[in-house]
Amino acid sequence: AAREPARQQDGGHAGNLGPMVVVGRDVPGALRGGASGIDAFDAHHHAAERAAERIEQAARGMQQPRQLLRRGQQADAAQGRVDPAGPWAGVFGPLAHSIETFGLPETLLADLLDAFMQDIVKTRDGSDYADRDELLDYCRRSANPVGRLLLHLYGVHDAQALRQSDAICTALQLINFWQDLSVDIPRGRHYLPRSDCATYGACQSELLALQSTRENARLIADCAHWARTMM
Image 1 (tube, rainbow, N blue to C red):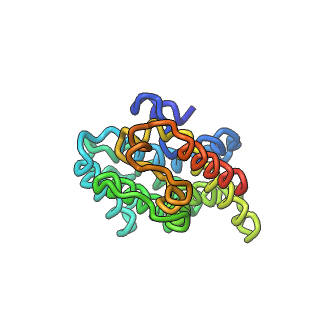
Image 2 (image 1 turned 90 degrees about the vertical axis):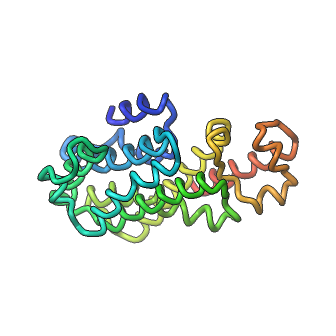
Image 3 (image 1 turned 120 degrees about the vertical axis):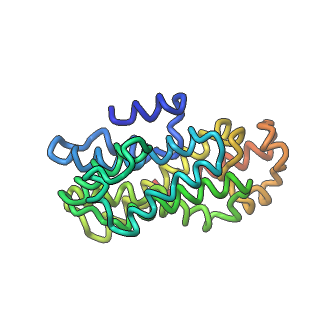
């Protein structure tokens, strides 16, 4: 239910929100307040990015939340010191409460911000991902923190659980990429690594034109298999 407003804001597209959409459904009532703070933080960045009239507007809009996290000013935000007319007024209040109540690791929230900013910059510059390692590093910051934050709410901190969570969140992120190619490419970005494109002889111009070719089909099928093996 917490995801519906974000879907309505951006016309129904869930963007890169696979992990939060899936795991957020099963959070018990006692932890729902903490999950809601994480969810609002996660959803608002994606909605702001997609709704921005220009990429530069989105980049400028990211500066305030980044500064708030860097300076440890979540409490200030909760006390109304963030511009009440600004886009973050309804985000940092619940987030500050969740951080204080549940001790959420701020480094994980900073990773999410860093990944969102990377999305904005890559879209602005029309750049892509060189190889799978670079894409996995993006997933480490854009998807894995969601699972780790929820495990933190449950008091789960062992290394095996964290590894399994990272694998699941990354897989969900990759699945979201491959199913959303027809949506992301017209928006000026895609996540198919250049090295994989080269391996299958996929033509960049044909990909950008959303043309269905044997090479493109083999490329996407292999990427889907890669995601499946990580689950």
